[in-house]
Image (tube, rainbow, N blue to C red; front, top):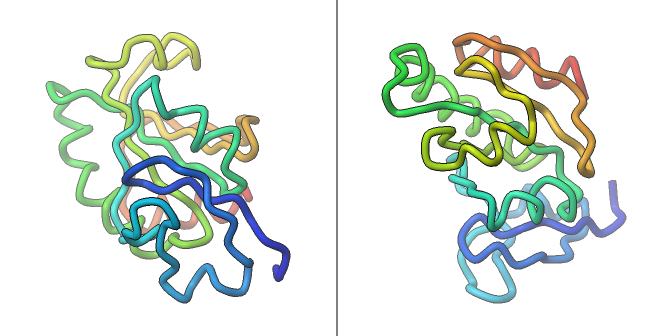
Length: 144
């Protein structure tokens, strides 16, 4: 994993070329100088989704959720905990289907919460329903 990877910044969404062996060494964005990984999911909307999903070379685990959804609120801290375990090998993101219905429609999200795992723009797996952090981590690693 020494080849450089394109990694989207979770703050300014700029693509950064990071050597694979340096992913775990707390790399910073060349544009905004903030950490590329901070163990928190990034909130994505239609404006930056493709940058993280298709242009970044990291796998992207997306939690499609809505603020009114009880199971989504229960799973939120679990998804946050999973980010601490999966980064920097996987970028975790949240898409609010209420404020971003275009993305939910584009990916055929019919129930929430729904986890979808993408790599280089291609959907690898999908799981509906709330999950515990350990189950999210296990499910993600199983499908990579």
